[in-house]
Image (cartoon, rainbow, N blue to C red; front, side, top):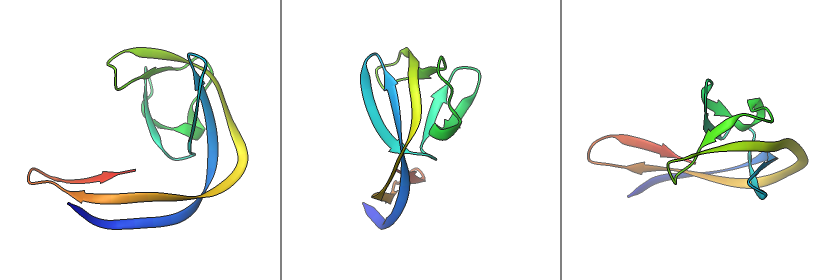
Length: 86
């Protein structure tokens, strides 16, 4: 169950892995080898990122797009724990 929705403006970053471009917020966390959970803005080209497909991929590029967009985060309720999802 969604408990609360947060709407705000945020800078957008562009990551590229395996030729795919991802747009994300600067603070969105990625699991990087040797860095653990790391904000997108703190990633470096060549970092290895863990995917939801249970494998490592190499970060080919990372850059601030200069865009600021409306983003949505929400908090959900779980019987086991409160989770914050972005």
